[in-house]
Length: 245
Image (tube, rainbow, N blue to C red; front, side):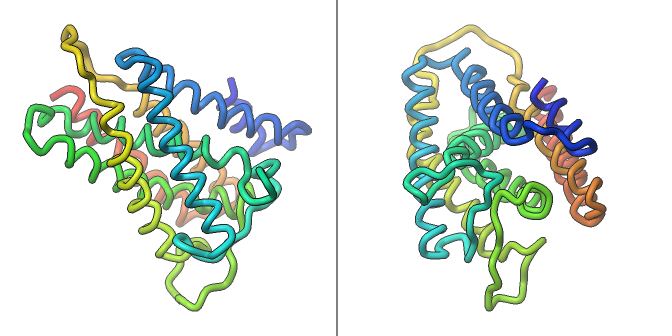
């Protein structure tokens, strides 16, 4: 319902758009954690989510004050009220949704190789890549459509939709750091019965990218929309291939 309302709000002005945005972010995070809770104890799920929120929120707060590591930016009103006038409350939730579902996508892609000795490291590396790719999708929507944050001029001439290239590299490295910290909490310690692939991350991946692509289409950012579709479909193809292997 929240996803449908977000799509509707792109085409028709909605009075309570701030509340719809907040509900969408919170429900996406809740759905992510609920899906992981199906195979892990609740304390592990909360520990992993707390680690992502703490590290991601901390880096974002530092970035807003120092321009490092993401580049010069300021948060807009679209992100909602700020904690201590530094960090919008929604940012840790956004990190949780992106990082944990990127890991879910990586697990789907690498499912045929889950018994490989280097599987864990491969999941971390591929998850970081998915986070970087999703940020390429997110920036035009967050900056130019929703005005969640505003990118300031930088000395580096190479940017994507106003965001400096260092921002995307930093997102990938930050995701790798988070996953190195939280992965022990996400490992299933007890043997369990054989289950099929977990597709919740794929559903959220496609839904979020579809929303970003629709926002870019409404504002006629055609290059960004095409890239969104390429990344969304490409990730889905590899994820489905791994799921049915």
